Amino acid sequence: MKRLASPPAVRLLTQYHECASLQTAWNEIVRSQSGDILQLDVTCTFEWVMTLWRNHLEGKEEHVLVLGEDPEIVAILPFHKFRKQVHGLPCRALAPLTELYSGRSGFLIRDPNGGQFEAVLGALCHLEKDWDVFQFTLVDGSAQHEQFFAWQRDSDLVCEEVCRQASPYIVLQENWSQHFTSLPKKFRSTIRNGEKRMRACGHLEYREFRGNADFGCFAAAMMEIERDSWKEAAGTSLTSNRVQETFHTEFLKSALHTGWLSGHLLLLNNEPIAYVHGLLHNGIFSDLKESYKTRFREMSPGHVLKAFVFESLYAAKTRLYDFMGLCEDYKMKWTDRTYSRTTYLLYNRTARAWAARRMSSFKAISQVLSGEG
Image (cartoon, rainbow, N blue to C red):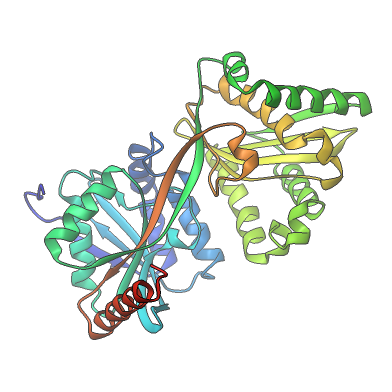
């Protein structure tokens, strides 16, 4: 592994207000490492992470590890401490703040191939002694994924895979007409027929929210649709989860200010019936949330709206569409491409970490002997 010629200066920030000076360097690192589907995404930006800190952790003291000094900051690691059950044992855990809620997350390292990976993880192990496990997520096959395991082999620390999730994405083609023609014939008919049925019922309108958009109008429409969607009964809507509702409402303001907001709304006779709340960052559209009102389901409002969305994204020279989340049926009608993110536990050299690893080994042996493995 390549090593830095000289170790960068290290500092540890613990107060929210201390982080404001990091915003420019932070977002420059994300921008430089977010141009591809195997890299970071907009959920690693300063605005996203600070909203998590305010909302999910209520602004209480956390930790931001910084390597380097302005304007040569080479790595930033915002993390929090918590208790976690690991194979039945209570452990002291560390995790990047993005583990609370994010998409294609990872480490904020300016050059993953330049020895900075070793520097940031070495600094974490040196400054923070009282932890048993470090939980983090990486995109499979990414440069960060390869560099982490190169460092892990050199460090002799044990790493365990916790879970893996695949998500669909689309590489946008030359234009929307070509893209639409490439879709399955039956699916194209579903979209066309749905739009025809809506237009037969009255005035169909598509609105895009960007730039100086009416933030309040879009936020209110989102919540109205969520309350009248299938998600509400299932308990998965934004309006059924106060933390998530507050987070997205707050982040909408930041996304509007930075120019990342890419909100899309479908209205029938002036009634909001479907929305897509996305972020357009560095040529990649991240589909954060979307839904439609249940009573319009037979008209395929989600797919009809998506056709308008794609037309708009092509006009904005968008390169990739990241559906995010799980590979649900409605997403897979649009694509067969996926990427995977894996969450890991890195075990420290503590007695409790050793005991948790032993419990993991015992469980694996028991599963094999019982025929479950």
